[in-house]
Image (cartoon, rainbow, N blue to C red):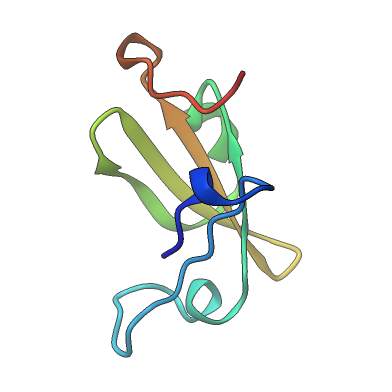
Length: 86
């Protein structure tokens, strides 16, 4: 994984090791990510392919499938000041 804070465009590239426990769609197709205020609302009625989980303190993520591509939604805990939004 690359560091989005070191990218001029704020892009983070994720690469997975063989046997990583993620859906094939996430392993093989680049995805975009959106910061949302309410993750539960954002995934409501969507085809969820990775259930909400917390990969790091103050962050909850989930993946959906949209038009055959993975999309990540990210909800930051604003009280911790970890949001990337300006």
